[in-house]
Structure formats: C-alpha cells, structure tokens
Length: 262
Ligand SMILES: C[S@@+](CC[C@H](N)C(=O)[O-])C[C@H]1O[C@@H](n2cnc3c(N)ncnc32)[C@H](O)[C@@H]1O
Image (cartoon, rainbow, N blue to C red; front, side, top):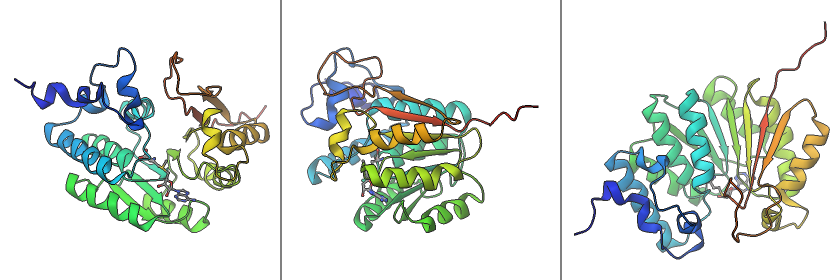
C-alpha cells in the first residue's frame, strides 16, 4: 500500500532522475524538508502538479531546497513582508514564498519581476490556481529598468526589506542590478544573490565572469555593506559537498547602518 501523500511528499524524488532533483538524491536527504512538510495537503498538491507540468514542458530554472529553506527561515522567522524577486521563471519560488506570506497573513508581500511575458503568464496561472494572487504580484519588466524599481516601490509604498536577485547571471547586468536595487533596500535589509559560485560563472552567456565577478567588485566598492559568500568556491556538482549544499552558491548582502563617529 502506498504511503499517504502527506508522509511521502518530496521523498518520492529521492531516486528521481533529472538535474532539478539533485538535492533529493544527495545522501541522507530522504526526508521531507520544512518548506514542503509545512504545506497543507492542498498546497502540496499544487507543488506536485507544478513539478509534473514543468517536467513535461521542460520550463526548469528554479532554485532548490537549500535556498528556499534559507528564505523560509528568514521570511517566516521574522515576518519579512516586503520582498522583491528579480527573476520569476516558472513560479517555483513565487509559489513557495506565496504560501509563506499567506501563512503569515502578509498580503501583497512579494513583487516578482521577469522580462519574459510567457513566464509571467505561466506563473500567474499557477498563483491563481493556488489562490495566492493576493499575496504575490507578478510584474513583467526588465530588472535593469528604473521603471521596474519605481513599480516595486509603488507596490509596497515603501522600501523592500529583502531583494532576491536570480535573473540573467550576466556580469554586466548584475553590476547594474546591484547599483539600481541596493540603494532602494531598507536599512538593515538583505539582498540575496543566487549563483555566485565559481561553478555558476558559466551561466554568464557573455562569458564575463557572471554574478561572482559582479559581487566581488561590488563588495570592493561598498565596504560599508556586510557581505558573505556561501559556497562561492564550489566548481562542480560533485560530492563531497560543503554544509551549504547548493553548488551554485549564495551571496548575502546586509545593508548595515553606517556608524557615524561622535
Ligand atoms: C533562474 S530563473 C529564476 C528562478 C526563480 N527565482 C525561482 O527560483 O523560481 C531566471 C529568470 O530571470 C529572468 N530574467 C533574466 N534577465 C532578466 C532581467 N534583466 N529582468 C527581469 N528578468 C530577467 C529570466 O527570464 C528567467 O525567467
């Protein structure tokens, strides 16, 4: 007899083929992480159906369990309720963040941007199916465009508390995103950059050094900001993995208050 879906959930992927299931295949990951176990049965059914559809269509580009788990802790542990995401893709992180915001009763808490109209439409369709349209707004636009920033600011009528940068992975574009979006972040806010590792440099189609080079240069120029790079030296998806398991790495910038000497 098959175990109830509630217990099985993401454990069905422990032996799943396909690059997107890499986390589930790692040794010892035969358990349901809180980002999934925390969902209601109806929410989990949406996630499962979303995976089935995107497996069929091949629209795959989402972050994985390590990053979304970190977001889960940050967002739900602190009721972070003004979040910008640059790069929506097919809606994975939008759905999961939407479930968190609904749990916290934090409407309009995520403003997620993508320049691809079809991906925006796809994500909106899944958010509607999940009943999350009061919590997540999908905006079509370019993250390099100051009008996109203005739209996010108008949406929140204030400053974002957290910005998740997961868009083109190009060096030049990431420099411009950091220069445009960091100043708009609330003091004490967080800017997270996915794909900051050596491994992820190859995602830069311009071959200019990707998010990693942009992040390194930005840190040099902005010593007042506190920043760390998780798993930044990772060069392959091979085992063994460091404690932070995502080979793509994560940059975290904390907009610390500047201490003015007396
Ligand atoms: C890696 S995917 C985002 C995945 C998403 N954060 C998730 O985990 O579900 C990157 C997305 O960024 C979008 N993108 C790339 N350059 C962009 C830009 N300049 N402005 C807005 N979106 C962009 C792409 O269309 C793509 O859908």
